[in-house]
Figure 1 (tube, helix red, strand yellow):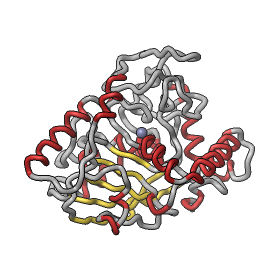
Figure 2 (cartoon, helix red, strand yellow):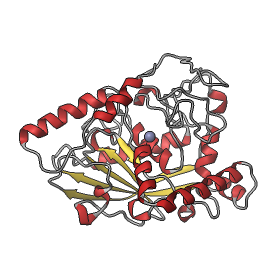
Figure 3 (cartoon, rainbow, N blue to C red):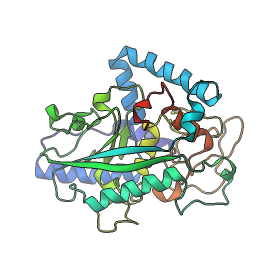
Figure 4 (tube, rainbow, N blue to C red):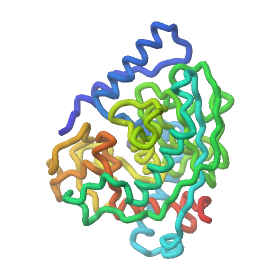
Length: 330
Ligand SMILES: [Zn+2]
């Protein structure tokens, strides 16, 4: 089921500043819950559009990465086989910005998130529905693993961070990334009305990484004592955002029947929300059944459970010789 109205409503939502009264804070928390109750919200595409406006050279870099990725997918470049045979073990630095004790997520909650990433990127997550239409194109293991390398915590007076990357800059009250060209940095914070956002390959290393709302960070199933937001409590926000960080686009291509640059995903009319019924169909040309269970859709955590082989190729292309994330190669 589509909820196009959510997108319209999203455009009306406000971003919140840093100094709010107590009553305003309560209102903010209510508004955040209400806005996310309408459906998943990821800011990656909007942040990318803003960065493309700020930096005219970014489009050129991303075009070059796109051409490189296409050559890689066509098995036509040096480094492909080498990269495919290599298990990519990615060091992960988690940066926790907190104002309340709930926002200061525990080491166990962080560990649960790393565990979810490892399961989802290995295709070993137990919730895969083997009867879905698209099992034949489901990725096996992507050979991408995640290892916690360090946790940095910082208390803040900021009530709600916006998507302007301030949480990634110590000069703006945030935490600078650690070794961003050879590691994944994740920031956990109160992100207002968004669940998360990621920086695509090609952007500045100073802001590279993914941001996840503290209450969507980790898995209630693995660490029940954490603080979680309903329906986004199984760690799939990070799976989705790390997908962007490895160059995956939303499965609907951010427009009606848009292109996600992956051959084995079907066209989508738009984002799907909640837990769609099986065999939800689109009006796009080609295969009509939407892949609502793909991590790059907007469905609830418990209803998304797969990447495709094409998405796997696209992610692994980032690690190839001369790929945009070659710095992570062992
Ligand atoms: Zn997204």
